[in-house]
Length: 491
Ligand SMILES: Nc1ncnc2c1ncn2[C@@H]1O[C@H](COP(=O)(O)OP(=O)(O)OP(=O)(O)O)[C@@H](O)[C@H]1O
Ligand SMILES: [Mg+2]
Image (cartoon, rainbow, N blue to C red; front, side, top):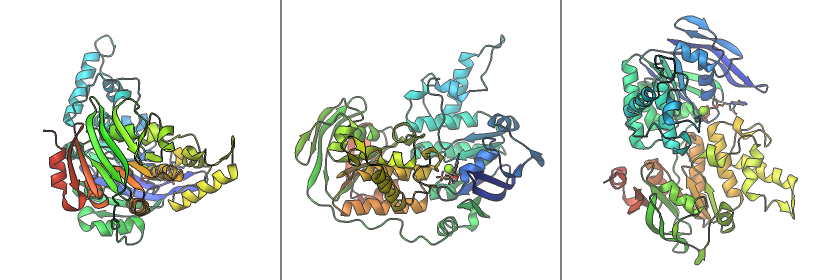
């Protein structure tokens, strides 16, 4: 149905995609796998008309075609769900879903009622109950992703390119998406899929193509590959221990939260966090986990309850208060809250530490550059240099830069909200090692994660949040996925 023939892409004199040929068949799920920066999104964006190739051709139903814009590709029958979500914030959910394909009435005006019904139908196919009349900017990251998926499914395309569609989804939402993909397959649609979640690939894919550092490595039937074999193709070496061993947590309480409430998001949350401990907040998307940790970092200043740090009642009403109290955070919503896209990698990394890098009122530029470069190499951020605009980095490398920012101001209490979302398996292993090292150095880590395996393998203790309540507190070494899900499900 669709063929990439020797497609190549250069950026600023660097070839980020070496000539790559792959074909995509009707009714198949074709996974594109590779580490951060491997060129997966680049290949997809060429196929979707967003980038022009610097070499090679696209064949569509055996004809050589040129897509000058995403509109060209969409008209031909190719839709894409983007990794970096691009909703139009001040429009409604229904307007976003039907954008460019609005149902019209007899006089040519947009039929608002049909628009709402159409959006609701597409959302229902994904088991979602988001109200289509809501404004886009009021949605969570997960809901935004569901809307983007509904939008692509509504285009009745013959090829749907899905670039990390599940990155922000809970397990239940993932299951709904997989059912939708099964229906697409049955209709003969070609699905091209990228993800950093190994289990998804083997559940979904018929064939797998691997890219490494912009180079085509190979295409195989999924049933001919095993996870270790696939990982080896992706990283070019064997990867032994993804999860390092846990250290011993101390009895020394560094953070105590008493009766934290902010209706209707969460209520009466109390817990203690010890030095050397990794405490996970588990639960379904929308359970209130992000709201709780946002309060601790001063992002949601109106709440009831008390936050005690090192035995002292603390007043945290802004991120500056939190940083001064020794709290660092990597937020879940990297695009909305974390990243300053137009600024350099260096500026993004040093943003929370400028007070430490200044002499009086003046920023010590030499030191800023030195510290940023050290973080870049410690986290193996793939960039052409500290001055590169961060929006040009691949998703995973943007995330590593944000973790570097959080650690640069040397917090004692580290809040990580979905720290490995969109990060490749090699980088995940690096980040897990960093988290364990931080804990072993006496830091306390509060981890929010939707990947159950991650929670079970990294944390000492797990708090399960269900609809804003603290539903259970579990010893991570003595529980399992089923128990976690059981506590997380709404009653
Ligand atoms: N617009 C751009 N300008 C400059 N360089 C770019 C641009 N887009 C991508 N690149 C570079 O091309 C390379 C491949 O990036 P790409 O986004 O395709 O990777 P990816 O495989 O999708 O990674 P990830 O898993 O992190 O999403 C990266 O090194 C990236 O920095
Ligand atoms: Mg990508």
